[in-house]
Image (cartoon, rainbow, N blue to C red; front, side):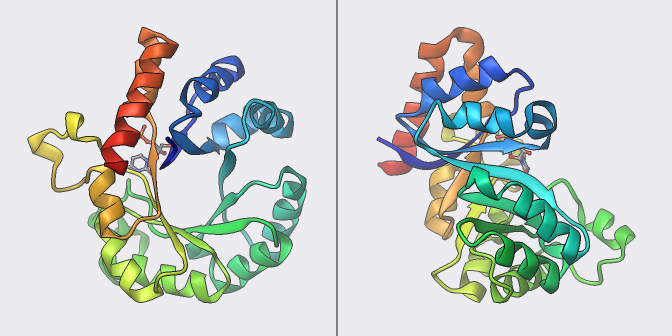
Length: 233
Ligand code: C5P
């Protein structure tokens, strides 16, 4: 059964990407195609994946530019009809609004703070507040600007859910299934099930599923199925 899993299709090989999709389709709701994929294979690559599956596409381009330029970029991919398109919330309210206006059929998805940034990194960039406060402020602003979905770290789900209400989708990467929860990083990550319980609508999962590919398509299918069961049960 399909779980609220967005599979990160992080591979630079188109045929591998297509095989990952057919191996996992019974358990995965949405496929995330990122900058590496898009810059390598372009719109034809996205269409090749769409021809493989009825599942939705999450186009993770993380647009960030002046509103006019972002609107043009959004229009350029409109015919692909991705269910989600990411933009950086830090591009500001007008930029988010420009993307929303350009893509009425897509959930413009605002990325709050990259999970790769530490508090020190944020301070160095010039952020005045800790990551959690900044992420909540960026999420609120983006939803007011028309964003239908928010990307945040698992640790920010509860605070963002309470501040944006029930309607906006919350999507979180950086989750690890029970079987991979090492004691050392438990503070920085969550299981997919806990993320959903905390208020996430979807979890983005990559390597915990895709690394099973080295043991073959059946192993990958089984891995996706077991993580889906972990979430749904
Ligand atoms: O780590 P994993 O392979 O599951 O990552 C899946 C996706 O989530 C990747 O595309 C990565 O860019 C993103 N990610 C993230 N923050 C993390 C870990 C992964 O945004 N802490």
